[in-house]
Structures are given as structure tokens and as C-alpha cells.
Length: 190
Ligand code: HEC
Image 1 (cartoon, rainbow, N blue to C red):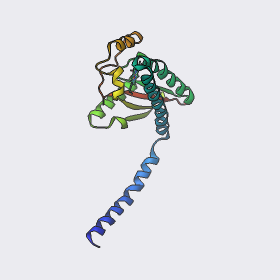
Image 2 (cartoon, rainbow, N blue to C red; image 1 turned 180 degrees about the vertical axis):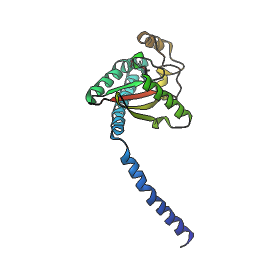
Image 3 (cartoon, rainbow, N blue to C red; image 1 turned 90 degrees about the vertical axis):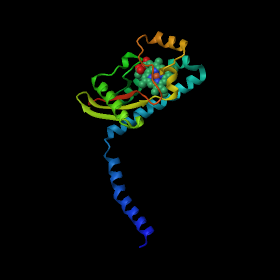
Image 4 (tube, rainbow, N blue to C red; image 1 turned 45 degrees about the vertical axis):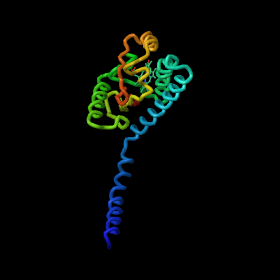
């Protein structure tokens, strides 16, 4: 066997050893995590679509209503559809009804630590069986689009409109690449 052939056969051996492990790892994921991911994807995509559309149609002041009315609406619809509690939370909330409970607070702090240790925000998730049921959280990255309403330089009249609805708003001063918050799910045990 020449060197090239040897390399090739080593590579094949390596792949054959590794592939079954990858397959097992996929199968091993708790179905409740897979379900949670699916529901959150549905939530995120719906919200993003409506937000972008409203921004294009009538600018950010028009889009506030998507976040103010549609976001809690989608959250309620999904909660009823799946009989779970589905919502959003953050270390710095705009709507104080979204403030984290103790479990969520600990997870959000852990996400910040994991991000600082180099983990990709898009991959940050955490789940656990608790006395309240199976709980799952997934981090939400701050994108450029979000800065209009959550960034450091919010337009004055927009800021006034936001403050009118949310006098205790804490959700400003974010930069692109920050963790804006997290989706949070409780799958109640019946
Ligand atoms: C047009 C303004 C606007 C834009 C743009 C915007 N948001 Fe918000 N955001 C709001 C408002 C208003 C609320 C409060 C919603 C509520 O009452 O539940 C909010 C709430 C949130 C919350 C729930 C936690 C909290 O602070 O109460 C998260 C998470 C969030 N936004 C993330 C984002 C992300 C991520 C983006 C970018 C993809 C974004 N937002 C873009 C206005 C905006």
C-alpha cells in the first residue's frame, strides 16, 4: 500500500468508527427537547416574519404593536395548542410580565457564562426535569434588526412611544451579538 492509499484507508476507518456514534447521539436526544425546539422555531419564525413585515410597511413605531400585541398573542396561542407554558424572558425585560423566575434567572446567567466561554449563542439551550414539569430554554441572539428598539441609540420619538407602553422598560442598550433573552417552555406533567 502506498502512502496515499494508506491515508485513504485510515480516513475510511476513522469515518466508520465515528459515524455510528454520531447516529447514536442524534437518537439519544430527549424527544421533549426536540418538541421544544420545534415549537420555539415556530414562535421565532412567526414573530420575525410579522416584525419585518410591519417594519417595512410602517416603520418601527408601527412595528411596536407586533411586539406588544402579537408576541404575547403567539405565546398564548402556542401555550394553548401544546398545553405548555411558552414564553420569552430576559435578564433585562421590556414587559415586566416577562421577568424570569428563579429557575429561568439561573439559566440566563448560565447562558451568559457559556457565551463568555466561547459557546455560540445560537446553540445555547438548557433543559431539566423540575417539580413544575419539564423545562426548556433557548437563547435569543440580538441581531441588527433588534437594535432599532433594543439598542443603544433609539430614536427619540420611538423611545417615547415605547416608554408610554412600558414605563419600566429595561430592554435597551443591547449590542448585536449580545444575548437578548431566551424562549422558555414548561411542559406540564398531566
Ligand atoms: C419595533 C420595536 C421592536 C423591535 C424591532 C424588536 N423588539 Fe423586542 N420587544 C419590543 C417590545 C415592545 C417588547 C415587549 C413585548 C411584550 O409586551 O411582551 C419586546 C420584547 C422582547 C422580548 C421579551 C422580553 C422582554 O424584554 O420583555 C424579547 C426576548 C425580544 N423583544 C427580543 C427581540 C429580538 C431578538 C429582536 C430582533 C429580532 C427584537 N426584539 C426586535 C419591541 C421590539
